[in-house]
Length: 182
Length: 76
Image (cartoon, rainbow over all chains, first blue to last red; front, side, top):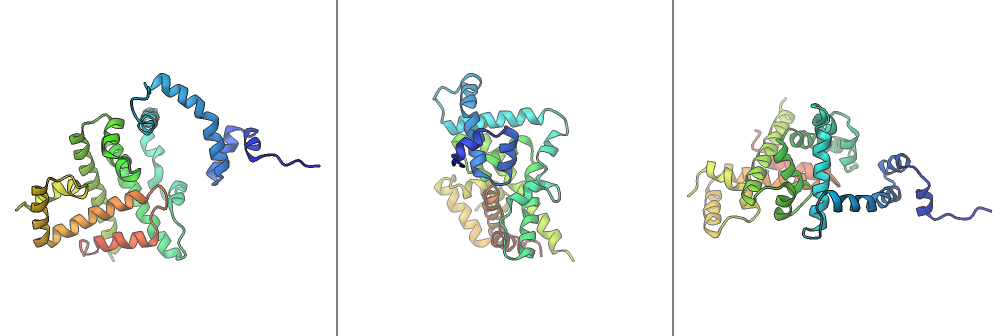
């Protein structure tokens, strides 16, 4: 007789690598199991390492942890930023995942090219400009919260955001000009 | 009235609603008579919109068309 085992119990038996592989294939249950597995550790880590005492919002705290993690990873090798943000690489799987499959393959391909151009433009920004742009425009974080995460004044954040947007706009302009060229 | 150069510097604040009423009025007066700046503002607006779509549905064909329209005259 085969007793039915709850999905959560099944996930608990899988290794981190197995859960991660499943999550990458779109298995939400696996992703949830992975996050739940590390949630208590992250919370304790945050309490100790990131000075979270309830005087900032949880989202600010989590973005701050993620930001520090990304900075640390980028510093591992001098080529790390390009490799870890390889969204601009042709045929990159991350870019593929960003796409919304459209019924018209030609249209979908053109959309992917724009995504790749956007991703490349983001990757080419100065670090501070990229942080502000990703938080504000990609993730939709409110200005005040973005300033807290990055540790800049409101005025500085406005300048960084303005310059970042101008560069991404210019990159798109070049992209469409090249596309229109005979 | 503000110049095109000043307009470019203010576009982000304009889109975010951060200009004071006087500056906003001057900005819009300029937009009313400057088609190039109107186009520029529209391009920045569409760029921000496209960035906001990146994590989830990225750019569907329709979103790409909106961007293309915003940039079409500029690249002619």
